[in-house]
Each structure stands twice: as structure tokens, then as C-alpha cells.
Length: 177
Image 1 (cartoon, rainbow, N blue to C red):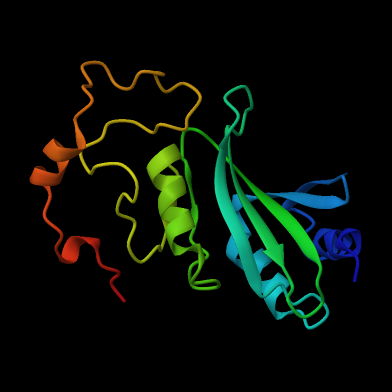
Image 2: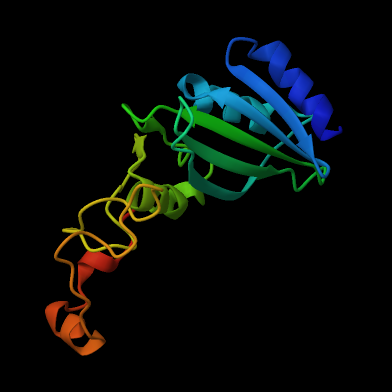
């Protein structure tokens, strides 16, 4: 099945949720409302003719000039059929949250943590949404377009040796099942 055919099936199955379909350089993107992202993704996995069994990437994007400022982008692939599609969930600035897809693709775990850490997008139902790249006491979200280029006011860079002394490797850094 061709990606545009998959997009058409999504429009039929989720007519209220599908907002837009674009095709750029043979990469089909479907923009959807965030409310039923789990249902949309579950459909893409479970439909035997689509079988999007692999989440190759998930990331956040910030468009400060848009009414729905953030996107969570899901790059999906069918290993069985070798087709791909991109789903873009539209998220407002005043409530930057969306349901987690970790129950559908466990590989989404650290991608969602990164999007939360860098953009402040909360993934409802995520099993462990601790910061993954920034220290727990870090203020702000560094990949937002309005984040200060030099970091928060009063921020000082520390040498690696100083940071190494501050943190000991313990269970905090292990994956919890």
C-alpha cells in the first residue's frame, strides 16, 4: 500500500482528527489532533494491510508563530511492507501534553523523555518521565525557540571534573521496568 493510500484511510477512519496531508519528496505526512493519537497509532499497527510495527523516530518541534505551537512527529515504518508515513500531532502552548505511545512502541520511551526535557511536552501515561539530558534542577526547555541562547540568567558552565564529583553513578541512571 502506498503512503498516500494510508493517509486516505486515516482520513476515512478519523475524519475529525486528520487536519492535513502533505507529500514532500515522496514523504507523506499526516497532521492530526492530539486527542486520539493512541487510537490512530493503534489503528496503524493493527490494520493488517498497514502494519506500522516500527517507530523509527519521535521528536518535538517548536513553531512559535503557529496557533498550535508544538508538534510531536512520529516517523513510522512497516517492516513487513516496507512503507513509511509520518504522523504530526498538533499541540497547543497552553497545554503541551499528549498521550504516550510507549504502550504501543516501547522504543518511544527515551524519545518521549527527550521531547519532554527539551520542549516541555508532557507525555501522559509515560512510565518514567524523568529528565534524560538536562539536570533535574535545570530551568526551561533548551530547544524551544524562545529559550535564551546563552542559557538561563546566572548560568555558569562547569568543568567536567566538577560535575563528576557532584554525581555518583547509582540506581538513578538505570532503566526501571
